[in-house]
Image (cartoon, rainbow, N blue to C red; front, side):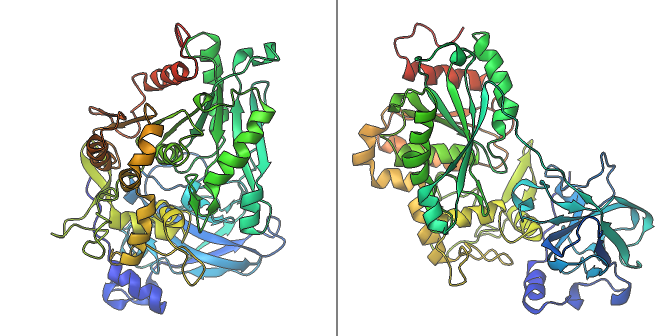
Length: 516
């Protein structure tokens, strides 16, 4: 695959600031002939005005099913434009100019071809985090043969379908927990519920006194507590067969309106770490037969969940008995998937000091998306909820407009040194080094981290830095760099089973074997 082209970000900044198309970047055809979209909504679907993020997708790729989606593994294969819509009413179409804000480039620059086109109204602004969700409205896929985007009549699309609501059905061994948090509710001024999926071991129903170690698992970016329903059945089966030790598995939800809150207290998302350790966990331990002691509270998570569990272990060392964190998001901000955030405004988020762009997403050693393109990709999907905006919601101060302050300019990549400095309190490597005298004894034997040497998002780079920091501190932390593995195949050779056995050995040190 070819590398993504560098996007015209100065053009984007001009468009966003002044609200019209920069003619210097436009095709040579007359402006009136560029492709436009007219979007309506069916009265039966929306008898009342509806609002949300309106997204339009266009692709020449073959399609399966009745919906178009972005393709993370081939990002430039789907053209996408997005616009905020207020009070869309049946019978009144709105016109969308897809050159105003688009990925990978203005739609009018797309080559002529046979296209599939669809519109989607993201009603709760969750698309940037988890893509299509319950309650979203969408149009049938329109197939247009021999479409010439720089010389086209307006394309009409009508929202006539709704994504059905997905419900979670409890079973004998998989339970849904919804807990109203006093601290989060006080922060937001309205009731806030924490959610989790609890997977009980096969023998749980047989006894009334037996207690179990508890594994707290945090999902990666884009996930939630639903992981209990697709991972739980296999875990229950493996525990029943003696292939995994019997433990309670709690799949926490870290999803919030601004993205993934990573269970860190923040001025934008609220006190999620406090709520977990002081409210939800005590509630769970009263509800289920859990050990209820540090050695019986064990953490694991991958990607954003890997960062979350490492953060929780370090900040609440007396609560948890150990973390097994895999491929965590950047743990040393000297390499935040490439950019160095620790030297004020000396560096740029999009490229190094020599002007070489930072790659974000790679497969087999080749970057398919660079950080500047990724920022554009997320901006089209919405102003908040995307991965970069999610980091800002956790790490950044709150701006005068009430929103998280941006770390970098989305058009130029220029870093904001004030924001970068504020991020320092969430730099795990820095935190450990500054507080090691106090934390070192409490973290002995509790830090286990693994990452592939070919991580898809370059996450091995900050871990090399953390490894060196921990070595200087004479920590016994175990950091594994698994040769050749990437972000998505790290667990292929039995890593999950080994982690479960090591956890059980902490909780039941006298047991002869953790699993067969």
